Every structure is written in structure tokens, then in C-alpha cells.
Image (cartoon, rainbow, N blue to C red):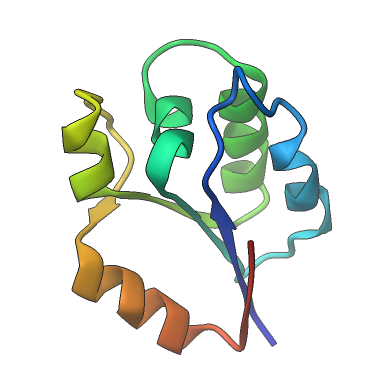
Length: 97
């Protein structure tokens, strides 16, 4: 069973949101939506550190492209549009938000 972790809060306003990633296993995925896309910016934060650690453990990390664009965030992480987000939800057995 795989899990999609959906993160939506900005790293500065909710630095603990990434704590759920400690439960993630290889094959799981993370998507940053809404203000969590700030964690994909090339600036160090608790969230960016957690995302790096998650990727090292074999998790896929994605950013919702429309949310990143709306906030002026450029990222080297893979991006998905809304249909891609729906595909990620369908691909995983459960989602945690």
C-alpha cells in the first residue's frame, strides 16, 4: 500500500507539517500544494530538509505547478498540473493531508 502525502502549509507558518514524512516509506510520494510550494524554493527550511531526506529514502516529491506559478516559485522538483495531481491520488492507495 502506498501513500500520497499532501502538504499545504507554508514552512514558516507550520514548520511541523513535514513531521508526517517520518512515517513515509519507499514507494510513497509527497506533493506540495498551496503555500507548501514555498518549501520547493531554493531556500533552506525545515520542510526542504525533510523533502531532501524523503527523496533519499525513495519517496517521489512533486509540486503543484499552478500553485508554484501563482506564488512565483521556481523549482527543480518535478511539477504536475491538476490532472497530474488527480493521477497521483488515483495511483496511491491512500492520501494523508
